[in-house]
Image (cartoon, rainbow over all chains, first blue to last red; front, top):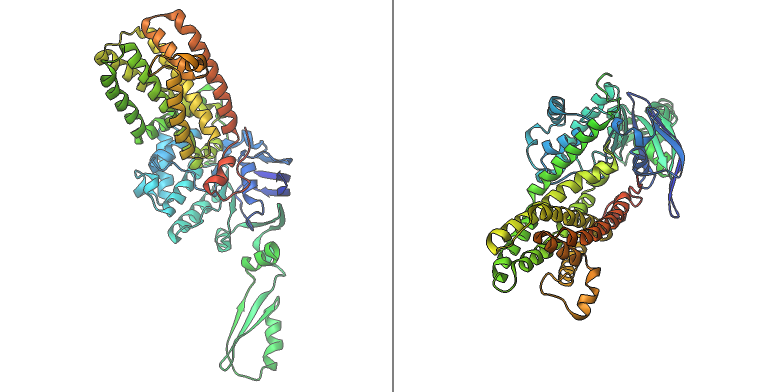
Length: 275
Length: 263
């Protein structure tokens, strides 16, 4: 559905993208993670047809971004809403621009608002909503017309747990219906909950791509041994069973507990994107 | 799978529907925030009554109309600045709406608002100040002047960086342009010499010819105003076509790269 290859983009002397390659299939949720400045937002802008790359190519369902806007649902990182319009008016605007009308539009507004738990605030002005409700309204403008490609740029920044859960549920539902989803975030547990494949970006390139299991394979987890008389011992390991078998016979003090922590996406992020 | 949007809507019908959606929404936003428009209607109405005994009706009505419609540039500019400050302009650019649809969807409602403002002032001037009017020519003049104002306001909003800059530019510009246009008193000396640099001069000339029913006298000023509109419209379109990148740093946005692409 989304096929970006060797994208480059520079702003003066600052390189935003340096050979950014990224593909997402229909029905796939692809988590795009990386430091601020890794190129995620510039990439989102290119896919949305708002930024022209210096080189490389990108297509959505085989079309260039400028001709694929009807396939795209975009929720940018920054809120982009009219504070004096109501939620219903906002959704009617974006639904109307994506080709929905009359009964289909009304049904889509109601259904999407219910899905994102906005039903009770449909006729309230956006400027009067909580931050979480505004985030959900923004996501609703992207999902309303059931686009083939959903581009969600840090959709849960500053969101409360209710908002986060509503968004994650809606994203999973869209992917189950066949939409390709690009989900950029710094909250890695969200990607685990979404069952997303991962792409780690650094300095304008995707430096790791695969499923969570593939990327976590070989990363060290941790064995923690707790004692009554002294501080706990933490031992990084890729093979907890063998590590414990080697450690326990050597211990001279009684143990009060053992924890085994498998490698997480946070570990992956620290190893690949940060260090 | 069947519920995912794949096919594109093509043809004139979808374009008109998108335009309709944009214009409905723009009218709705104007209706939510009518403060400027009301003040730019009420103030000239009061001043018309005060100046009525001092100057001929044509001078009073057309002069105040030009002055307060120039002040209304702030309405146009505020609409454009708000789209940038709210990041909604780039959000709209990411929809299937084409750039000219976006511009028309914002400009036509503004045009209507400005034309209605001027029509109300002319009708008020006719009823209470005694302005004699030639309806068809005056209507045409109002449309031409409204187009010029929308274009000037768009260009201005593309050039300034904040609401306070816009307010300063509108206040100084409106008062200077109307004074140089002869909106307050007849000009003489150096002021009369440089008056043609002001759009207000051509607006006053056009409107005074129009209310007199002088089609030939109206033609030249209308042509100049339309030329100004084309130039200002081009400036505004180029500046806005670059997206929000220029303003983003000024309003504290988080993306140093910005959405910079001109479509």
